[in-house]
Length: 347
Picture (cartoon, rainbow, N blue to C red):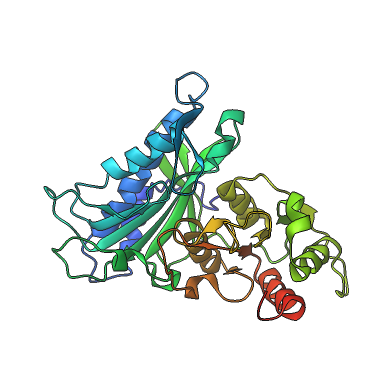
């Protein structure tokens, strides 16, 4: 969905400033925060594209709070995002998928009115085999009084309170996709200029879905409702015409979501019985599900955990996990219908 006006070049800085005009009382802090995140994306991309030539592939030997092996690029991306945002005076507190607790702003710096949550490098298990990975970010306004240290309450907010969200995907090209509640817009990094240029204005989820994305290997661990729903995606049972969906699954959430956002479809990661430690699903509400749900709805799609809208879930903990069905709105509604019908209220 490239820009229809090929004669006009719009940088991400210009676009963010234009978006700011929708908010007459804006101070510019959010604008600058978004531009700082674009800079983070450029720095991380510079490492990702040289990963095979530099000592940034492989594992660090450490585990994160999720019990997952920390990749070297995970660590680099996490530090980059923190260091470019800890001193600006725009943030009250941060939260990262890689940290057990909230990340306070160092005492020597002023705090601001926004909260930044991020997954520094989603899909990092695919780094060593050159599969697309990405960074996801979510921005809230703080709840605690300005001028004081940020709190856990500032972080534990439902997705409906987001003021901005987005992701940066590092693949054959580097793209930044974001929304401040005024539609979804995509920018491609021009490496020669070192700048993100508007390439996908006002992204809308295609009316006809093409793909469904799910890890079919977990089928033995799914509930009856999920099994029947995935069969519906495959066959379109009960529909006047077959859905005709093709299975496409990369195993990198940002990459799967990005493809379906542009081409139409649904990504799902149901709850399963394979890992007793993760009965509620694998994906993190604050760092993955909520920010992508914000984008999906802004593009005309939807996101649900199979029972309720993702953006309505009030997080109870920093690393809360949820099932996720995200993308085409009608397919999300079908997921809720199948799970309610075949799994009931207690499953």
